[in-house]
Length: 179
Image (spheres, rainbow, N blue to C red):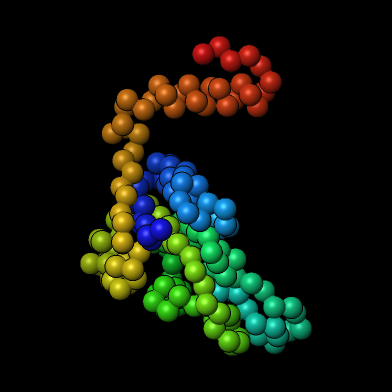
């Protein structure tokens, strides 16, 4: 049930590992909420992650539950966490320290119980040393660290992966599997 940091190049299967960690953990019956931090523009990241209180934008719109609160009692997977802006890193650190989330625009802080699995395509320790990632947030995420080596370093995995993808492709196309 510990927070996990997964490091590895693009395409090494970080999200597959995160899903398996969730499925094998005690939170497996609860939500698994994935957020690709690199794909969410900074202008929307805060509302997407933390939600917003009713009318917080100045427009009449209903309250929006953020991804963090949606993952309550389950697992929050933060992919490409190394691409988060410093402002979002600061707010996320507060969530991890206090285990509560405050929606944009105010409102009462809401307690949350979640496991965070974060993935980075780069080396977060290096990003910390270059002041590109908050050191205190790194230590909050780095409770358990997994490094996924690229396939070029795992040549023994090539044939089993090939067989798996041929089987899946055959199932999808409705043809006999020749393996």
